[in-house]
Image (tube, rainbow, N blue to C red; front, side):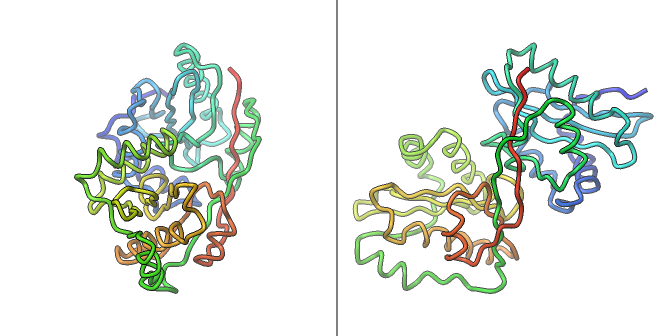
Length: 299
């Protein structure tokens, strides 16, 4: 008889292997450190909303959710290949929905649990998951895209572009750890809370994985970050103050991140939840690599 076990940090190595063995389109991208950051480092994480499902001592499925205000988020889930279409997914989802409802949730959303997310929605290549969610009453309503950049084909040199910016009083450099408070205040005053959280999480990386644009008075006016959402090599968020757009600042910030990833040994960058598709295509020959479906269910 299957039984639930509360997901705890000591299960991360086991969960890593389970995910790499059951997410065929993301196999090899799961790591214990990534799971720790996206699940347990989330300040909204509750032990009640993350569990393994076991049978005879073997994990046959898991589900991780998070409650933010009056909305629940289905953050990550999978059923072992050999146990699919046997009611395991329904058993887990029903359990999580009951917990969400008792916590005051009015709606459950799928996977795009910003600012701590693995994927910005459901990859429809996971056909069984697509059919499962539809059968459980979830409406898949909106498409978003990720784009990929091959880091092996360019050196992403920005020397000339940075020289031009310097003549107008702008400089681009890596964010320093001691600038955390200043950066946090600028982010929160300029962008959303979710972007603020995501970008500030880059200060936990060594080195810091955010680059900033400063004006002649050393005021922060733009930023770009990576390795704070999704998996390793994930780019974003990024932004430049509206009054300074069109000067090439955003392009240089993006390319500095790509060059940094290349130096770190990454061969590929994946830009998550892309807005300006043409910008990334023209700037770094980025190509759409995955499409995700966002959706929800009213409880």
